Image 1: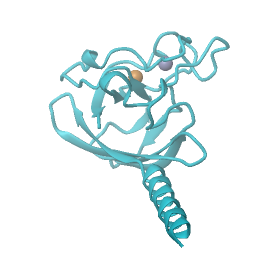
Image 2: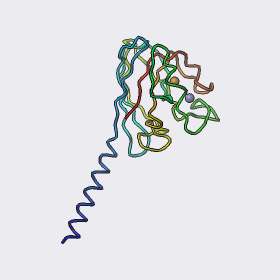
Image 3: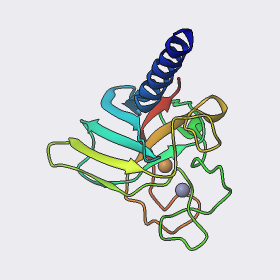
Image 4: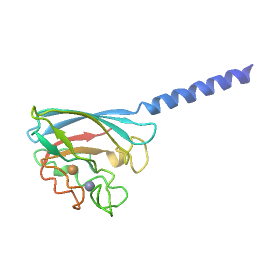
Length: 172
Ligand SMILES: [Cu+2]
Ligand SMILES: [Zn+2]
């Protein structure tokens, strides 16, 4: 009887732990160079590994833009250089098409519509919200940076993507 109870308790604790692990989620608030909010990217850890990115941005220049995870959770306007280089726990080179790549922080370009808005769901398989070296919370956190131009996906170290026009810190 006592054993059955302990087993049931252990099972429910394990299930509760599993449920909370699968719900790891964080909302990243992005600001532009003038310090104005341009919306959010909500990150959700996926059971299959990787992180889903629910992008909800506004007041950005229309067209294709690079989006990356950068190394530091520091977004100091106006140039956002404080965010550092691309998140790169494996010491690789830049670009999804680079044979020596790619940084874990690299990502496909996204498009801002004529109305200045971007609403999409995308995913990065190279990062997580856990505790290992690929966690976006590593070393005090990382940042999402949006650039003025598209990423060419091969030029090291940053894909010729131009100025950093928006930034949001990723911290616990
Ligand atoms: Cu970048
Ligand atoms: Zn890169």
